[in-house]
Image (cartoon, rainbow, N blue to C red; front, side):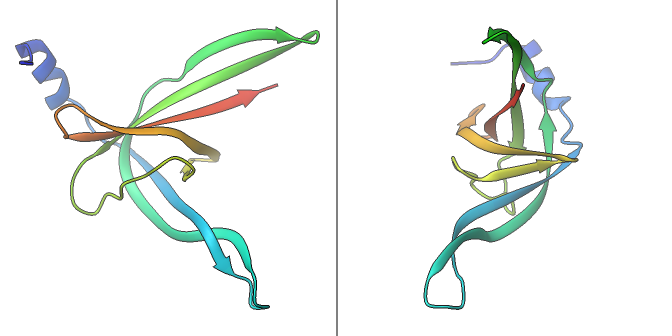
Amino acid sequence: MLKTKNEVMKQVGKIYKDLITLQELGKTPDGQGGFKKGVLAEYRVYAFVNKPKVATETEVGAIVSELTYQINLPNRLGVPDAQKGWLVLCGSKKFEVEHAYINNYDREKVLICREVVK
């Protein structure tokens, strides 16, 4: 499917300006013959973090807000293939990757993260 000139210009003008940290989780040895859940690798990359989409609900008399973040990473060497279950550290916030896919003719990786505020 061909893109219009307007869609191409939107992509050209996008700047990956937010510095985030991606953490790959897995099992690491605990020194006693067993394993514990820990960080296997850590990557610092520039990304484009979109404004979160907010959904508000009332549960048991309290208001619960759910924020869904879309984080775009450039698809090039040095940027890891983040998968579901990885952690994203963005400023002082920590998110778990809910979904990851490649978008825009394999030019960027998209991570979907969710934050629940009670």
